[in-house]
Every structure is written in structure tokens, then in C-alpha cells.
Length: 219
Image (tube, rainbow, N blue to C red):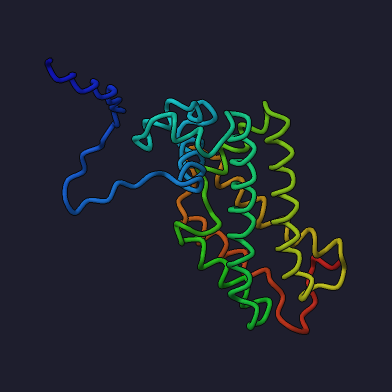
């Protein structure tokens, strides 16, 4: 009698895995949430809100849409995060520059802020400024953010001038003058280069009263 054949083994299921070949020594950088937001701000500065299409951002970062959806629920979620990042960036940039001058006199603080205009990573970002202001004309959410940005930055400048002038109205006017000059420098085409704007502010520094001096702004 022939021996019984052994039972056939169960079939083996093989799961196909997608592998990415990376040259030895290279690191495959996956964009972080911050990378996406920085790319979004750069896209707005370059192309306005049209640059925020997901496919364009993916091309800018060299990744697929899956990376975008890993960090954001959708275009609306990304826009909300982008506006918050913009507000934090431009408000903190000015506040950080002011904080670096706190140990000096208010007059010297204004002088150092004038010198800092030439810092390309500082608080004068004309391309982003003009793009966000243009977007604010057609989008209420962007307009609300830009209004907060203007109020906060103007308040920061008023904080310096309040140490020079006693009259609150004069403080507001004195802070408003360089702020409006900076906005105008951003809006002209092409935007005023940082070094030229710095020279304009150097002229305005001559209007800053020294300690014990009476300013025409107070009258």
C-alpha cells in the first residue's frame, strides 16, 4: 500500500512594498509642517495666492500631495495655518529687533532699527508685504490678519516713542510716520531696496528729539 502524500502547504501571501532607492550617504528629507508653511509664504511673495495651489507647492518642494495631507486637512486648514505663520513671523521680527535694543536709549534704539533694515531676514520683507496687502483687498480673512499685524507693529513702535514723548497723540503720530514710509517703500514698483530705505530713515532720525529737547510733534 502506497504511503499517503503529505498535505500541500498553505499558499504564502507576499505583500509588495514600495521601496525608495537613495544614494549612499544622502538623506531623504521629508518636508515638515514648518517647511510647508515657509514654502507657502515664499509662494505668496512670488506669485500671490495663486501660488498656494497644492500642486504648485508640491512642485516647489519636490514631493507628492500625500506629504501635504500628512500635515494639513485640506486647503482651508493650510490657509489658516499660513496666515497664523505670517502674523507670527512679521510681528515677532520687529519685536525681536526692538528687544535687541532695549538696553540703549530710545533714540539709539531707533537708530539701530534703521541699521537693521538692511538685514534680508529681518522685519523689512517688501515682496511678502505687498503680496499680503494685495490679497487682503479681496479676502476678508487675510484682511483681518493684516489689520492685526498693523496694529501690533504700530504698537511696538509706539512703545519706543512713548519713552521720548509724553503726549499719546504725538507718540502715535511719530510711530506712524516711519511705519507708513516702510509700507510705501514696499508698495512702489519695484520695491525700494533695503539700503535705500535705510538712507530715508537716516534722514528721519534727524527729527527725533534728544533727551530734554522739545519736539514739534508734541505741539
